[in-house]
Structures are given as structure tokens and as C-alpha cells.
Image (cartoon, rainbow, N blue to C red; front, top):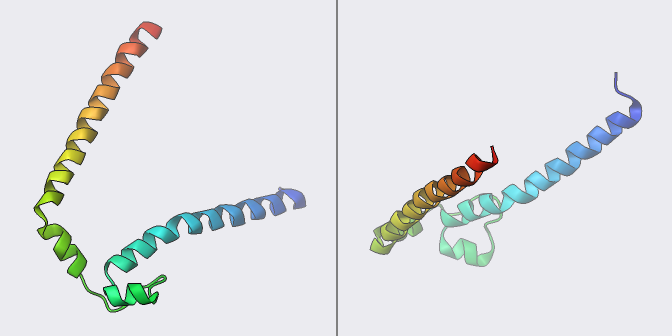
Length: 98
């Protein structure tokens, strides 16, 4: 059985971790809400947590841009090649150490 002090410490830890989680998650929620809200609502500051005047016009504009697909291709290429190169170097360094 936990002591009274241990229970208080656990409660404080849970509260602090919960607050940190909220602080870390809120920007992602805000960006998602702003991305599907109308530009007028975002500029007025009406979007805080939930989207206002939902529209997907911004996504349409981004996906119609041909450069975005080149950027995604570069991102995938650099991620795959970088990971493989990093694994190769790590394996080559780990083998003599083992």
C-alpha cells in the first residue's frame, strides 16, 4: 500500500505531465483547426480550438501545386537513404565493438 506522501507525489506528477501534454498537443490542434477554417475566421482570431466556417480550400490549393509532390518525393528519398546510410555506418561501427 502506498503512503500518503507517495499518493500526493503521484498526483502532482500526473497533473504536471497532463499539463505538459496539453501544452504540447494544443499547437497541433490549433494548426489543424486553422487549416480547415476560413481565412477570415483565422485572421479575426475566432479559431482557438475548434474550426469556424469549415472549408478545405487551402488543401485544394496546396495539392494542386506541382512543387509539393517534388518536395514529398525529396522528403521520402532523404528519409529512406538517410536511414539506410545511418544504419550502415552504425553496423560498421558496432561490429568491431562487439
